[in-house]
Length: 579
Image (cartoon, rainbow, N blue to C red; front, side):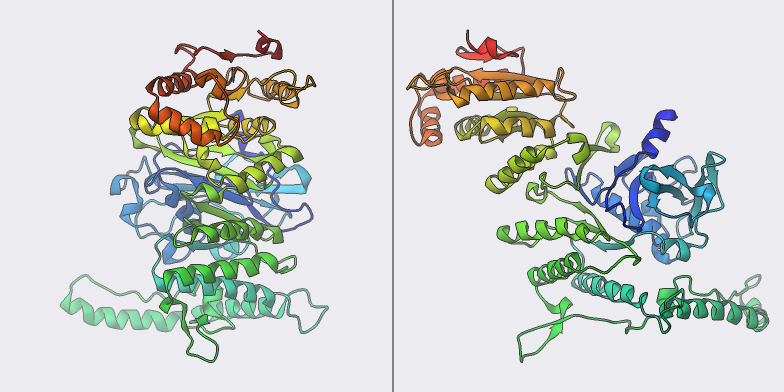
């Protein structure tokens, strides 16, 4: 229990310390859709990328936050398919916990867990007992140390306004839904501007907030004033109904609209964005092609990432399935940059699902990678693969990873699962890739990670040490001296590679294997001076003995129990390489 509390109170700095906006901290989901009784915990960051196989439960995680934020409306109610196995089991009711970080005591002292930097953690949970019914919402009382039916911030519509506003974009949403979401993004920014309009600069609240208060007050008075008339109407209609349907009656649901923003908006309800040639016909987004709609979405997001909407406005969270869909390869990098830039305004968080390694940028300080997968009995599980503060990447590491992202957009495939081998250069990568293709079933889960140089190997190792159970690094020993008798810098880099053993969590997880003096001489007997990857390809294709040597080395890298190939060294100290 103590361990669980420590995890709950872990602070995550997502925005500037002087930003007084709430932000999401953690989402914990049980018995919701494909997620079972074992909780799935998602640590939130500026950018969260959910990776994993198809049908692993990633979209259910995005839907979870949208659902709790819809409490008080029909979208906050579940249908029977949202319950485990499509049935109601009192022992396995859908439950979602949301943890939000706030900067003031507005929720009340009993709900505030104190965090560093004058931040407070508020915990809430929702439990659904029946389909079509509102959930039971509870707050974590830090003074009692238990859940309570009294809740922070009070009514759902008030509480929702204190948390980041969700914007959900499904992978295969209809054109109309996509058009609506794009319009909502723009409209939400305009609504935030309303909170700054004040007829009198000295007034505490904005004109918009005063109007909302008046509407809420009018709703309460209207319900009270018409209560007697409603009862008369119900009684008279029920009297006639009872003659045709004995023991039946009617009830007129005259509850006020809980979401006041639905009751009043300064803009028309059907706001649309039109597109077309200049001096030509403009039609709605829904009438555009899928590529055009996605481009419009990125254009809207790019604007939102660049605009500074000031402090005090309500923050946002973008929940997006597979942003790479319908994008040309050259546009994917631009789309990634837009998403990563979005939180820089201090007012956005982003959580996406993706099957594209291109959408992962390890050189950024604000990215969390979470793998969602199915474990035993098909239960959905999650594990955090990468968080910047845990990897402790220095400025050189970030430069190295940024360069790798540019040179090899598929570098980050290792986040999608499998056994990993880090290799120094293109020749080893080419040779092992050929063997992997020749024996697909044997090596289908093997990831060959090309570091493109000795000096970059430790940077890649820092990332892998966060989640990999074990991996092997293969590199060339090189010679202590150059052909001219001078000290060889490439030999000196062996000391840098040895430093991997000093990294946190490296013990028992990393193996170092070196080829004397390089991959080609160790396996093929001589080193080519040019076109080395191509020549290795030809050698393996035409020489079965060479192919067997490469396969034997790959097997040894993956399993230390396999025979060690000749001219290869497994080492721990540089002195081992001299033998």
